[in-house]
Amino acid sequence: MPSIKKILGLSLLGTAAIGVGSYVKARREAFQFKKEVVPVEIKTNGTGGGSKGKTLRILHLSDLHVARNESSSKLSFLQEITDDEYDLVFLTGDIFEHDESVLYSPYLLSRKPRLGAYAILGNHDYYEYSMSRRILGRIFKNWRHPDGKKVRNLDRLVDSLDGCGYKVLRNEAVHLNDDKVSIIGIEFPGVPKDELLKISEKSDKDHLKLALFHIPKELQSFSDAGVHMAFGGHTHGGQVRLPGIGAVITDSDLPRKNACGLVNQGDTVFHISRGLGADPRTNFRLNCPPTAYVIELSVT
Ligand SMILES: [Fe+2]
Image 1 (spheres, rainbow, N blue to C red):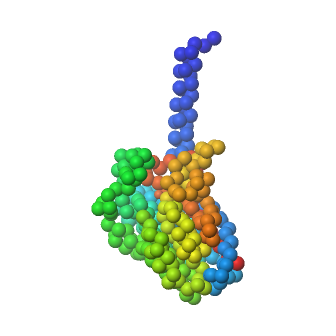
Image 2 (image 1 turned 90 degrees about the vertical axis):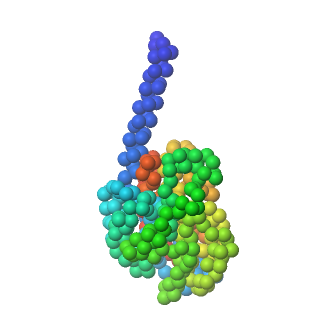
Image 3 (image 1 turned 30 degrees about the vertical axis):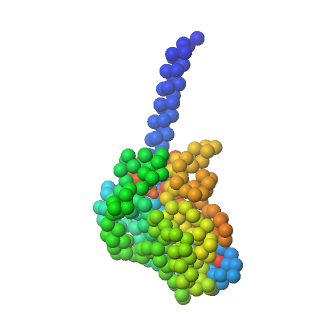
């Protein structure tokens, strides 16, 4: 009969082997980029009637976290996925992890979408995060983000995105009158509800109202602002999803089961992206592959 010491030793060895195996798998999965097609039907109840009967093909990208030494696999995927015919391309924040990452901006859009490409900035565009802040920020809410004085040079990021074909929406809206579509872009850290209502009310009642945001927080405001569909990211889908538990960490107002995918709240449909990257120091994914979404939106 084996001694307790031997049983304990074997158990420890087994646990360590599972841990190493999971880590290797998770590092590999972080570079297994996927495309997911998501059909969505929007009912225009009294507003957005001008878009009734139309369909829009929208590419939703998020959380690229392009690093200063970005992998060729992510850059090639971005080039390929954007080299297609879309009505719109949306990029919902956490685009450039480092200041030098802007050198890769030409990889972010291969073909101009019919109605344009639009981006908003996320918290990782605003700040570079130290590892201690990443860990302590998970425990202490006040530590979540750096001091407001440490904001990066956002003009440089905006200019780079503009140069590669994205219009960056900084708490403002664009109105595509010919197609009866309005797009509201709210960057990190978000705006108070009355400001969102002010931005929103400038759009024609006939327009389909779409919105971009980064962190899924206070989502009811988008519904109150009459937004038909809103696109966000930040959660990375939890990055690590355990069987029977799902997403471990989400940093979102939504329940863990809504760490990614479609969510209905009020009269608004939300699409939360798993994103295509993460902070390079913690870029591992388990049962949560990096994903670009093609939203096939039909307005009825
Ligand atoms: Fe992110």
